Structure formats: C-alpha cells, structure tokens
Length: 448
Image 1 (cartoon, one colour):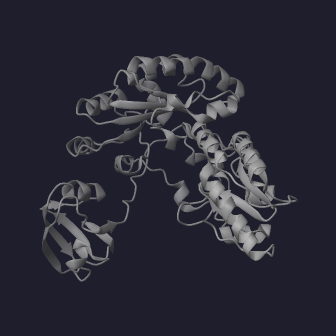
Image 2 (image 1 turned 60 degrees about the vertical axis):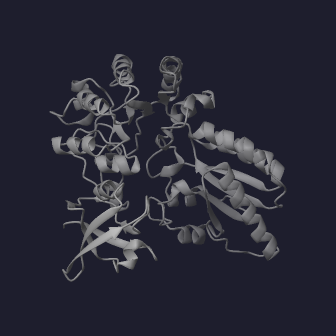
Image 3 (image 1 turned 90 degrees about the horizontal axis):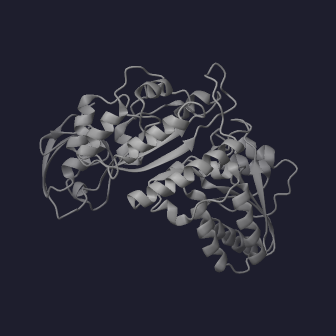
C-alpha cells in the first residue's frame, strides 16, 4: 500500500492542528512519494515549507501546506517497516539453530539495509540490488553496520551459503568513496575464516579506514539444536586464549597506526579464556558495544563508581539471576555491594537448557530455565531479573513465560532492573524501601 500509515499524532503538534489523525496515510512530501521512514526523514529533514499529501481512511485526499520553524517536528509517528527477509543460508545462522515452540518473530531472518541505518542491525549486502545501493549513496544513509565475515569472495559465498553474490570489498569501496561510514563484523568460525583468511580480511578492511570505522570479531554461537546442519567447531577456552594472544597485539598495533581503536575482540573471547580485558581506553567510544564488545569493561568501570556511593539498605536476602558467562564479573560486584549495603545478595547462574550449555549469555535465558534453576533455592525477599532477558516493551521471556507467571511459579516478588550496576543498585534500594514500608510483611514489588 502506498505511503506511510500514521500510528499517532502528538498533541498540539503541527499535524494535530491540521486535523491529521491516527489511521491517515502520508502519501508524499513535496511531491516525493514515500516508501518508508527513511524517505519521510530525508524529505522533511531540512525543509521549512512542506506540501503534505494525506489520504484519509475513507479515501479522501488532502493537500496540506505546512510552514515550520527550524527542526520543528510535525508530530507524526509511524510503524517500523516490515524487514526484508534474508535470502542467505549462512553456515552459522543462529535462527537455523532455534528449537521449536518459540515466538514466531524469532524465526524471521532479516537482511534490510534500512534497519541497518535506522537500528544498527547488521546486514551482509549480499542481496543488495543496484537500486538500493544507489539510494544509500543518494540519501547518504550512514552509518551502516555490515557483516563481512571474509573478504575472499569464494570463502564468503561458502560462509553465506549463497553463490553469485557481489564481492563485498567492491561494495565497501563504493560506499567509502562517497563518504558512507561503516561498522563491520566478522563471525569467527574456527578452521574456516580464521588464520590467513582472517589476516586478509582485517588488512583489507583496515585499508578502508576511516570510512570503515570499526571491526568487531565475535565467536560463532552454537546451540544444541544443529541437527542436519553443517558441522562447525566451537570456540572453547584454549582456542580463545590462543586467539587473544595473537590478535590483541594486532588490535593494539592497528590502534597506534590508525590513531584510533579499530579492531575489537568480543567480550566472549575474554570470558571463555578467563584472561584480563584490555584497558578501557582501548574501546574508544564503544562503537561495537551493542555487538557484545566492551560491555564487561564498562560494567566494571561503572561498578567501581557505584560502590563508592553505597549506603546501608537493609537486612534481607535477595537473589539475582544471570548467565553463566557473566557470573564471575557479576558475582564480584554483588559481593562487594552486599558488604556495603547489608543485603544478603546471592547471584545465581542459570544454565541454558533450551539452547544448550554452549549458550551462556544472559540475553538468551528463557523463563522456564530460571524456574528450574530456582528449584530448592531460598530466593529471599525478592528475585531480580536483568531486563536483557525480556522482550522490550512486552515483559516476556524467549519462551513466552511472562513476569506474572514467573512470579507465581517461584512464589516471590520479581523486580526487573536495568542491566547496569547503577540500575541494579537503584532496584535494590527500591526493594529495601518497599520492605521497610510493609514492615516485613509479604509484598508484591512491581517491575521497574
């Protein structure tokens, strides 16, 4: 359907004063037909006089001449675009390894340059049409987040499971030539794109700096549900130690050469290897933090700051659930916080039964596995759950267990907290305050 369906109109906004309402469709701006949110942002970005073409639900067409001040919003919000589906068949695709019975959206593979620009989603560009490349260049859609995996064309086709794809290096060079900023990643598959091939990929991407601003290397994720899928070698502790000993010095060399941190190793390598993280200055402005790079060093820095300001909270017991890989870091902070606050804080690592023991991150823990881990455990006054375990805005886990169901089945108040040291400290103080108000009586504490 043409145009963009308007989801809501802000009160007292420009659009509201023109009687634009939710359910209307914005068809065009200054004669430009709108395909998606990017067109809307592009054609309204710097214009002070706008001609809006609106279609009402009954089919009536309106033309609105709008004058506004610099950067004044029209007050319109739209639904996010439905993502373009991925046509790749990557050897390491996590979606292919999901068990049955999860929410349907989890099985959708997206490969959409628009979501790369809007949300920071990684795309391979393997399915990018010439018209889309032209649009990226024309509308200066920057930055983009690009999954490279290997610059060797033959190897890349093997990794992506798709023949005849455009050579990624040529695509990146075209984008670099017009000033598009790119952040890149390599999903590392031992025995496939490491060794000499990894050296080639890193060297060729670094040659495109500063257009290619950063490169993250992340280990492949393997679940227990890989039946009828290619056999892949996991990154274990020994491999991680050897990999860090080789590539951390090369990351430091690139930082000195480029005068900026460029190559980053995912936190998971250091957690698996159980070796110290690089100094926090090596992460620059954390360009790859959403990719699991630098989260732990930043956590430790923030934890030290929080601990300096902790005061007594109360005398009660509380349990915090976490992933297996982050237990060591989290438990050190919680132990120190317990000493300073007076609260008996217990950290409980939840083994991932749904995806298998190789999946150890907090963000992939289902509700039923939390319930299983708590069997026979004295939870205390409150159970604390980090927000990364829940679907944003819906309060449900990957397996559709809701917070209400979790609370009912563990028979304990549940508090969801922002997954930072300050976020947990704030939630703990709230718990202590509520318990004091109830004078020790059972109390339901709503999620933050």
